[in-house]
Amino acid sequence: MEPLVLATGNPHKVRELRAILGAAGIPVVGLNELPGGGALVEPPETGRTFEENARIKALSYAAQTGRVCLADDSGLEVDALGGAPGVISSHYATDGRETDLSREARDRANNERLLRELGGVPPEKRTARFVCVMVVAGPPPSSGTGVPPVFPSPTSGTGVPPVEPGYDLTKRRRNLPHWEQGGSAYLVTFRCVQGELSLAERRQVISACLFWHGKRLRTYIVVVMPDHAHWILLPLPSGDSTWHSLSKIMHSVKSYTSHEILKRRGRPGPLWQDESHDRLLREDEFYEKFHYVFDNPVRARLVERPQDYPFIAMPDFTPEMRVAVEQVVIAGRHRRDACATEDSRVFAMVRGHFEGRIGLPGDVPRGANGFGYDPLFLLGDGRTSAELPDPEKNARSHRGAAARDMTRELARLRG
Image (cartoon, rainbow, N blue to C red; front, side):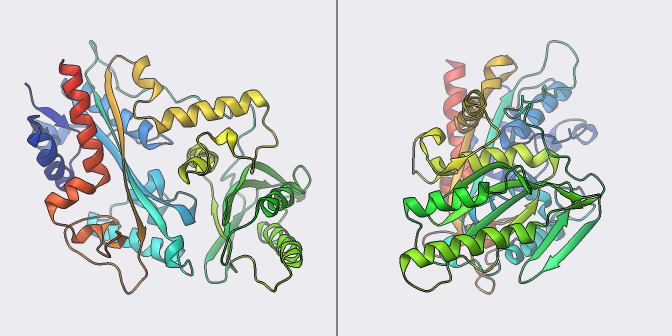
């Protein structure tokens, strides 16, 4: 069996995957071990999901090397941040922009930003997971770039907001920094101080978020969970080159719902945490965050299908559009993406998860047997993933889970 090419130059990944795949009898070789490997061109990771980016890399490197390649795309999803850092995990400190920083400096900057943005979030709300998607692809029969067609958008026709149009960017700060830019969409997450919202209270929060739809803002999607809400919205123009303020919109919704809900409960507040987490959405991440919000009730195991959750609203979507969105989200949740059957060069696609939470500053970072966010990622026994010995880490990690699934896929393909 010809060695499988691991489409990465990261020595940590090569070592980890070689241990897992090699134990299953699958020989592997890293890009840097190939003759002329240093001349390979890294493809731009333009995908909006881990699946798209892994597929782009596997197809591109297979085309360049003429060999069967395994590529992965992995990252961290933090629930309190609406799924961020997500696909920009490697360059979170610079909002996904490439820099000339060393790996160590980049990891340090990413970790510092993550801890800063989680300031004030209690330990039980800092749940997170590492995600790893692996794709194995073969070379084309003729030359090509290996870059797949753009994944069709389920929200086409609803008008993606004109993010980053060049209007002035302003900064507000309380405990967290808040950026506002006219004409941009935001993902906002706001949470209860304690306890959960009743079914009637969740309906009231949905109604409040939709009250100014079409007047002061446009709601793309809002989902109200038992103890928090995710809302993707676009403030509308209030005049020439001016827009309704996101901070005023959030103050209106949170103060109204807090007053009404606490009055019915007959006890004092506060209802909501003092600050919300808001994030300016770039066009290339809009759909990823949209899918994350739509799938949140399924991730929380409240329902089996997003359409069964009653506290989710997409006011501009027809029933047909909602079905299309659900189909795309379900396809992304399964181990093999629909695109794998459309392109015969993609042989297998799998997804692995590693559940935990982000520790509090002072307790983390800890551990030297890891990279990226490993020193911040707490497991149930109190250790970080950077404190795990290699055998245990390979057995528990997102990359280990995906690699084990991939060995089964490759065994099946070999017949």
